Length: 281
Image (cartoon, rainbow, N blue to C red; front, side, top):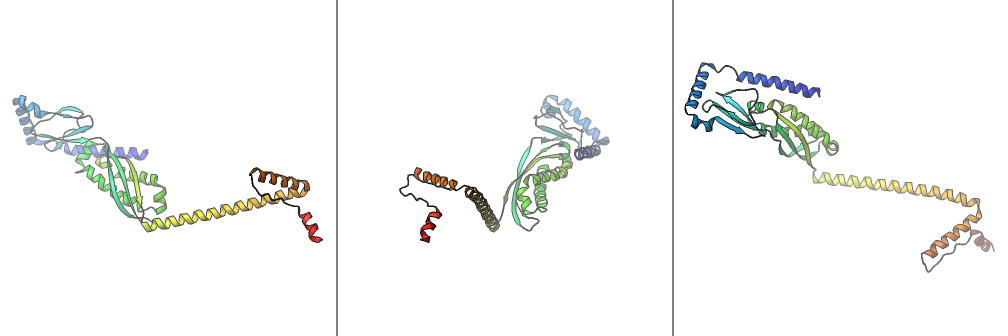
């Protein structure tokens, strides 16, 4: 918050200095030309009416130049305003938000991986006078600066950060762009990373790595399941060993389960004590 207030204060001071340089005295010749232009406008009033009054729309502002100098610290509009036909000229500035795509940029990440990244930027003109007086083409300059900023920011990130922290990268780009375009009267509202394209070989290597990691986790989970099952069987055997009748009940439950499934063959388990008696004989 403090940084934003400082930037606004600095921008206000630079804008006032810029206007003060351009709103000095017109000089003797300048005032003579302005007076002559006013006299001619008054003499040809019915005709010059169409040249003196201009209209700008709600989303536009007009920066007026009189003999090449900015006439006021604030732009005109919206609505109707007056100019002198011979000495005044004006530039219309659109205040609506503009969006543009950043072309795909081949970027070498911090861990030496080449990726292709593109994005989208949303910005608008915040100070019409600065956007006209401080830069020749604010829209084109912002587009070029966005491409350079994208390459500079992503060059300091590794591949893992690039794939997982897109929101943080977009916020960092927005901050850098907003600071750089502050003197141009541009406000960067939003920056988004659209797509990250990896080389085919790298995609295959990452897919193989992910598959191997999944197989390793599956083996670990299966081993843990076997261990838990063996512990449960051990506890069950200890419970059954305490009561011989519990084993007979378990036999009956098994027979009931087999009969419920409508099987034609029923395996009847015999106690080991009975079998061992016949084997001894």
